[in-house]
Image (cartoon, rainbow, N blue to C red):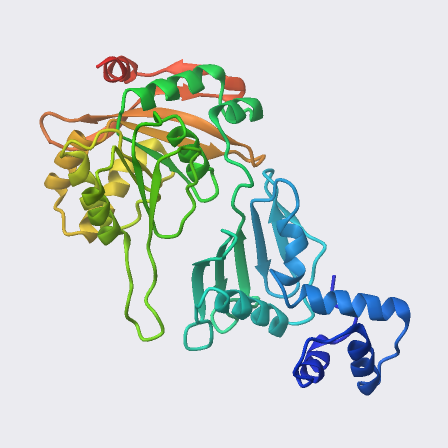
Length: 383
C-alpha cells in the first residue's frame, strides 16, 4: 500500500523544524504543500510518516506476521513474503525506487554500514536479529532489492519438527542418538531449506555440561542451551580495514576449550581449519553447508578446501577422519521443509577419495528406507 501523500516534501519541512513534529506540524506542512487536510487524511499521513521512519518502514507489519521467515522486495512494485509454504505476494507497494533505497540505506546505517553507489550492496544483521541483504538499483533490476530473513521467535525443538511433519518420530530418535554419540556431522541443503533451524534444534540436545562455541559470519544459531559462546564475524569498514572472517573465528574458537565446535555455515577456506580441529580430538563438531544433496557434499567441500590451499588428497583424508554423517534437509515444491536423507561418510580404499553412502532415506509422512550405509551408521552410533 503506497503512502497517502508524497512524503519526501513533508519530511523536508518537518526536519527543518529542528524538533520532533506533532500532528499539527504535519497538517501545516501538508497545507504548505497545497494538500487537502481532512481528519482521515491527516491520521493516515501521520501513520505513514511514522511507519517510514522507524523499524523496517512499510515492511514492519509483514515482519511481525506469524510464521514469516523472509520478506523480499524486488523494486518498488513487488514485495513477497514466505510463511513456510513458498513465496506469496504481499499487499505492500512503494511509491518509487527512491523510497526503497531510502529504507535500505536507513536500515544499513542503523548498524553502521555503508550503502551508496560506491558500495551498492550490504549484508548485515539488524539489532533485533533480522538478517538484511540489500542491493541498490545501480546493480539490480527491476530496482533496489531487499531481503530480510526473520529470526525465529522461539527456538524449535525436534518435537516441533515431528509435529510439523518435517520428520517422523523414528528420524527424531535417530538424531538424538547421533548427538548423544558425539558424531561429527554437517547439515546440508539449499537456501531457505531450514539447515540452521535444524542445527539449532540438535544443539539443544547437547548435555548442559558441555561448552558449545559457535563461529558464524552473522549470528543466526540460537540453540536452547545453557552454555553457548558465540563468535561473530564482521566485514571491513568504509576504509577497507577491520574485517574478521570465519577462518580467524574458528582458530580463536579452538583456544576456548569447546566441547562442541560449531561453524554456522561452511562457505570458504574455514573448512580447512574446521576439519583440522575435528581431527585433533574435538568430537561432536558440526555445521551447515549449501549442497543440492548429501551425495554432493564431498565435492562441495573439495571446492571450498581449494580456497584454503588444501590439496585434493589431503582434503579427502581430512574429511574421512573428521566427518561421520551428513544430514540433508530439503524443501519440497509445496514449500514444506523436511529431513530427506542421512548419509555416512566413506572412503574408497584405492583412490583415497571420500563419498557419502545413504544410511536412511525419509519420505513424506515419516516413511523411511534403509540404505547401504545403515550398518556403518549403527556401528558409529554404538561406538
